[in-house]
Length: 79
Image: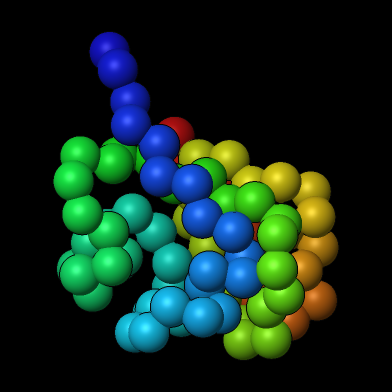
């Protein structure tokens, strides 16, 4: 089974318009921010985040976890 990962940086969450506070493949697709066949979300730590996001992703870098939690958000790993 092949998966298609969509990679975002924490800074993307901060700067993209209309990002919901609950971030997942499903919520980003519903908001029209994720197109195509992506079925897994990967969050990397480039950039800064000041909003509290609750992130559900397949993989999250250590620096991204630290930045998300510092801003008051949470991270949950999902398959």
